[in-house]
Length: 274
Image (cartoon, rainbow, N blue to C red):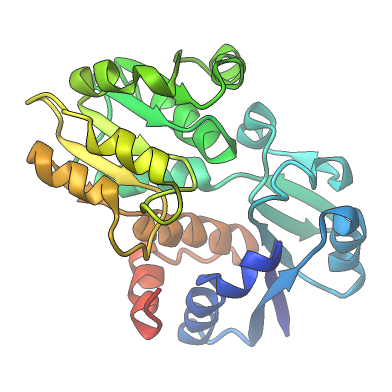
C-alpha cells in the first residue's frame, strides 16, 4: 500500500490535503493512504528520516517546515534549490528528493483565472515563505515588475535580493496598490480578527483602474478584506483553493508517475468545505 502524508505543525489537523489525495488515490484505483502528520519543529529531522523507515513513498511539507527539512534530504530539484524551500518529498531508490510544486501551482491558478502575469505589474503582500514561491513564479512567467511589501523592510530586501523584485515596507502599500495590475496576498492574514491593523491598511487601499485581479493565497476565510478590496477595484478575486489543488496534482504526479489533473483535486474539495 502506498503511504503518503503532509508534515506540518498543529495547523496540519485542518489541512484539506488528505481529503484531496485520498479521493484521487481511490479514483485512480491505487491502494494507499494520505495522512496528516503533526511534527514538532524540534523533531523535523526524525520525522523526515522516519518517512523512509516507515515505507512512505513521499510527503508534502507545509508551514513551518518547508526550510527546516532541507538538511535531511539527499537531493533538491532546481526550483527547490533556488527557493531553498521544499513542499514535496519523493522517496525513490532509498533517496529523499526535495521538490517545490508551489511555483507551478500558483501559475496554474493564475492561468485558470485568465490572468497570466506576463508583462503585468504585480504587488506581493508579505515577504515570508509563501511570498518566495510567488515572486519566483512571477519572475519566471515574465511579470513586468514585482513589488514586495514586508512588515520588515530588511526581510523584503533579502527576498528581492535573492529572487528579484523591488522591496517596500507595508506603509508604502497605498502607492504601490495604485499602480499594480495584480495584487497577491502572501501573508497569513485575511480577516480583521486575524489582524485589525492589516484590515485597516487594506481598507484604505485604492487600486487603480488597471487592477485586474486580487489573489489571496489563504482560503476559507469569512469577512475576507482582500475579497472586499477586489470588489472596490472592480477586479476579479481568487482565493488559494485552486493553487492548493494544482500543487497537489503536481506532487501526486511526482509520487505516482500518473498524470492526475488539478481539476481532479479541486473537485475532490467539494467533499469537504473549508
